[in-house]
Length: 358
Image (cartoon, rainbow, N blue to C red):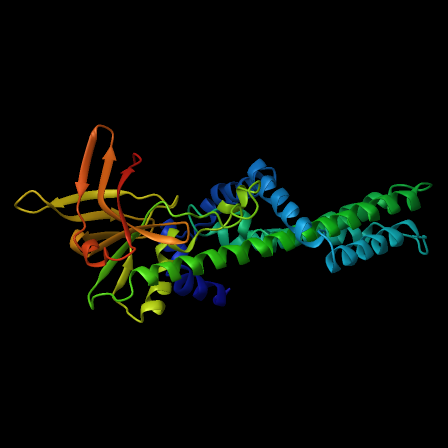
């Protein structure tokens, strides 16, 4: 209890997750009546969400294409499938089965899920996502294993047959999950490779930067990490955030690349969209600064220190001027720093951004 209290007061309250979502709560009544129902409704919603199953199905297809396309992978999975199938079909009952251990295993699985969900209870507005289901899924698997064992004990004369059927189902699940996990690993690898290519292209464009605070504004980047090579698997492109979609990932990457702590990236909202809180004008009517409202911070960015860019066809394209449009209103913003890098093969294009309503 003491350790958890220290964790909650020191680590949890100051974490980046809390900074994004706003606040923590240790009110037992609020946790039991609000956060617990919200969290498990969210978890159940993910498990039946068609978008989640679409991602998993595409990951399965991607893994199957990689492993079953021929060669060693095809041989390995054929041997695995035959071994699991033979084990299931050759099953013979050797001991009497009781339901005691099965029910205990199910309870352990349920408690595992509760423990996995516990940290989420204390952060207002925090929800499960498909990327954070690994820990609770282990508990769900234990609960299902116990439930299957209990089901088997309900059949007296058909126990061996039911056991074989369930073993075949589990063998199929093992092969399917293995292929899906392989596909997911490929998604992470392709995403990482695309991030690296984007940083490399940015470095080719901005070979040297002024020794001053510079703000980067990435807009409408090509984020086709998977569909560029697998055109029919478009959902996997959006499974992971790109490096430049979140400022707290992009800033450290740029600082390492340029060995400078002066670099900043404009923060976007929780949906990776640009939101503008205020535009400041100079005496002559020119835009002087823009106040961006991000997911975790509000930033006042001078336009003479701002570099906007996009990434297309393995190249960085500079964006200038920028037109921010909201309803019937439009504001044109010139970025003078862009002229410093508009040379050689560097492409500069105007860009119009339609702002969503708050």
